[in-house]
Image 1 (spheres, one colour):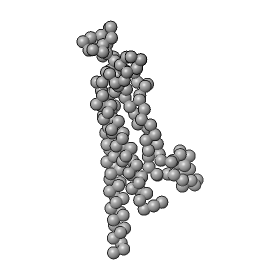
Image 2 (image 1 turned 45 degrees about the vertical axis):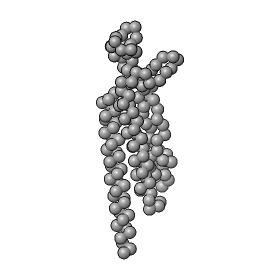
Image 3 (image 1 turned 30 degrees about the vertical axis):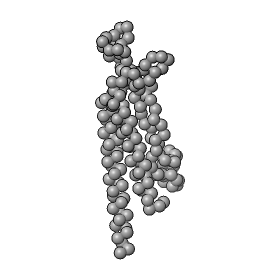
Image 4 (image 1 turned 90 degrees about the vertical axis):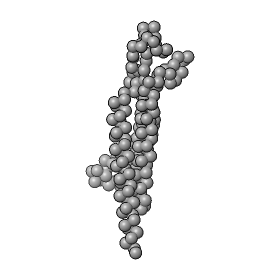
Length: 153
């Protein structure tokens, strides 16, 4: 373990939380976008995107072995990475009655994106708090390293 291991771990968390906030911002910006993608000659609304995070080079068995105290120093605490940014295809589009809308069907309903602003705000607060916590850890680590350098004076 190097002297900068803690900073590298925190930096990976900052990077992933930043990407998570960017994806949430994109979802919020497209909450009313009815023409996001052209599929088979027809426009489809914007689909909500989600971020999947995974520990860096870590396996669940390593974490379990460390927690049980049965060896396995392994790859615990190396940080996180984004494994996937995927579209939410499970949540259906919302139908809104607006016969004057240009994308309304014959019955007057418009398919709107499957973005729930309330859920996005909760996720944004979670990502922001995680980012702030990692900044605090980074600053504490930096202060400890500075104090360690003063020992030799």
